[in-house]
Amino acid sequence: MHLEFYEVDVPIHDTSRALHGVHVFTGKASSVTEALARAHQVYDAAFAARQAGLELPGQQDGGWGARGVRDGWELDWASAKAGRWSNPNDWTRKTPYEL
Picture 1 (cartoon, rainbow, N blue to C red):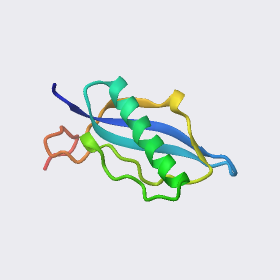
Picture 2 (cartoon, rainbow, N blue to C red):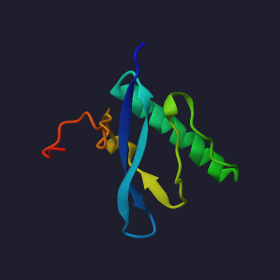
Picture 3 (cartoon, one colour):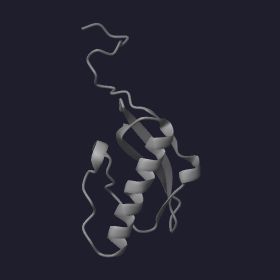
Picture 4 (cartoon, rainbow, N blue to C red):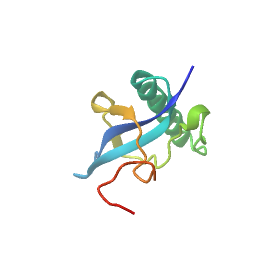
């Protein structure tokens, strides 16, 4: 099975202040559905480790991992978006600028 690199963007907000943002996950998956599931799995594992006072797990298969897990921030998984990741620094990408 061929795996592509995906990005999962999950809206996030701080429950004690009016702060909002996006938590970004990246890793290899075979589909958008799998990418969303993998991102959710690694976040759940990292959150559980943090709650138990343990070190956050490192990268898992496919490069998935979760860092920056903070108390008081909630992720809106129902509004998460996923798609194939496009490296903005890839030298093979077409740009409006010439070298």
